[in-house]
Each structure stands twice: as structure tokens, then as C-alpha cells.
Image (cartoon, rainbow, N blue to C red; front, side):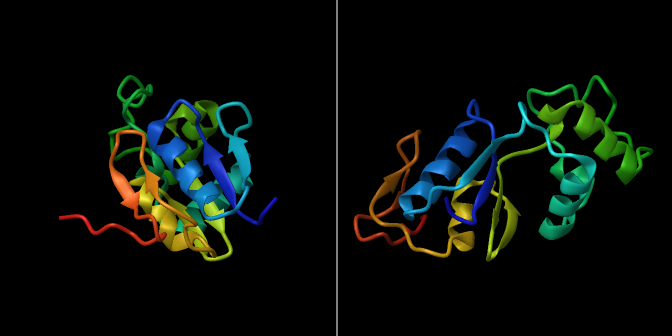
Length: 143
């Protein structure tokens, strides 16, 4: 196992693509299915700090109780938003990847490429058919 960790949701296409790109670099990461094994407060706060974002920026809206809980209100403190994420881990946006090169919310999935110590070993096409890496392991420029 490598020193790469992905906080993963196997039901999420972006998360699956990110995991596949990590593996395409020859690494087998530690995979944490955060809905089954949520991070504790210290870990979540550490991830947020390492990414250099606010708790609000880590909140996932789509497919979550975000609206029902009224989390769009500016009155919630960072600590309260973290409390909500700890109580309802689906509110944590994903995938979060930790490598020796940094920590990042990898949306879009190609954001992981800047965090990988090793280059892609071959072609990579996302689940939706979008080619990301050519057969020489180089990024394909977007138009």
C-alpha cells in the first residue's frame, strides 16, 4: 500500500474516476469509504486545514440534507458546519485525496493528477467516455 489516501464514495462517479487515476499511476491507495467509516473531528478539521478551504467549501449540496437543514444560512459557524458533517457524512464533498504532494478535494477528478508522485502509466478514459490521459501517459488538453 502506498502513502496515498482517498476518502471515497463508491457510488460517486467522480470518486471512482479519481481512484482509477490513482491506480493508473501504479499506486494502491488506502481507500476510506467515509460513509461507512467517517473521519473524527480532528481528522476532518485537519483535512480542511490541509486543503486550505473552509468547512462551507467542503459541504456537498447535491443528494444531501443540505437544503432541509438550512445550511445555506450564513449564520452557521465553521464548528457547527463540521458538526453537521460529522453527524451526516454525506454532507462531506468527495473525493478527498491525501498524498505526500498535498491534500485536495478532487473535483473534477483530474485534479488528482497534480497530487500523484508517479505519472500515469497508460491511457485513461473516464466512465463517461472522456479521454483524460493518452497512451503515453500524458494529459490530453481540453479544447
